[in-house]
Amino acid sequence: AADAILRRQRARESSARTYARSFPVVPARAYGMTVEGCDGRRYLDCLSGAGTLALGHNHPVVTEAVRRTLESGAPLHALDLATPQKDEFTDALFATLPPAFADRARIHFCGPAGTDAVEAALKLMQTATGRQGLLAFTGAYHGMTAGALAVSGGVAVKRPVPGLAADVTRLPYPYSYRCPFGVGGERGAELSAAYAERLLDDPKGGVVPPAAMILEPVQGEGGAVPAPDGWLRAMRRITAERGIPLIVDEVQTGVGRTGAFWAVEHSGVVPDAMVMSKAIGGSLPLAVVVYREDYDVWAPGAHTGTFRGNTLAMAAGAATLRYVAREGLVGRAAEVGARMAARLDALRGALPAIGDVRGRGLMIGVELVDPEGPPDSCGARPPAPGTADRVRAACLERGLIVELGGRYDATVRLLPPLVITDEEAEAVLDRLADAIAAVTC
Ligand code: PMP
Image (cartoon, rainbow, N blue to C red; front, side, top):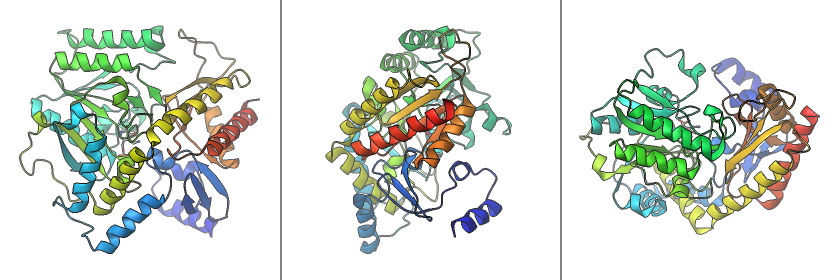
């Protein structure tokens, strides 16, 4: 049956399928961080719906909230009307926000994907400031619709779309391992901030007056690259001094994954807008932008949409947000994540193909390199995307689902659910280490 399903979907679906190519698994059931294929094989899922499943698959708190809402007879589609589910969700979400931000915040329900919320945030700030330009970063990923694509870094996916990015100024994200300027770490981050400042103030620097700066506090698709806290504070200072709104994209980093409820909290930065999706819907599609009330400038109807919030997603999302906060899963993500990263880092001696281990909390990246290749000016060896691809396949053979990312597609990314047990964490690392050894030794 599984083979027939795979064959039919391969024949009928778009050639743009990605996950289905990397993981030819037909899932029959899923629970916690386990996915069970139709053939009975079990996999530990370190992709978690691209970082969506904070509570893993089918957590009882989520399924119970969905079941209760279905049985209540509440309208499953309610446009942008006021509903008890929306009220509960908004309450639960605002309770998680940094107080300095929540006190004066408004929420706009977008729908239903992360890219929709990015789009809304950019347009809101363009409306509010009357400016067109945007500041974005190398290595960024914000989504696939025109505005979100324009501020993303990947050239291959942008090239076929004409007219994008004319007014986007790209600044260097502090990539600690292969930082530009030939310097990694904190010093590279300082230089990156100095460069941004110099460029913005250069009358011949080519910067179209910016409506906003958009950044990920930890780049996800860009390869689990955490921005140093000092760099984020510098970006806040630089934008505030020039009257440029700061949009923080927490689509992947949000809901505890990095060891803070929102990754921006690590730095103490208070943004002007936060873009949220993925985990806030508790497995179901939901996306919002939350912004300072000064930017509440849209006239009624200025940004509409048929799907703006979804009753079931709001119920599942409220239950998830409350559970993550109540059960201390944010601290747990920090603790298990640090332990996993430390163990991976300790493998570098035995497995020289591991060039870099980085991330924050349960957002971990392992950049694979050619250990024989010449080091660059930061001491980093050449990226090894072919090795990474073989490691992903070897992981799947060992019952482990991991995805790749990063600028060179050479980074193995681990995004396990926050409910990962110690035993599961050990099993993930055993299988990954075994896969890297099998491919590279
Ligand atoms: N922003 C970030 C940081 C993301 O990681 C993603 C998705 N990977 C998006 C935006 C876009 O979200 P979606 O795929 O739901 O449109």
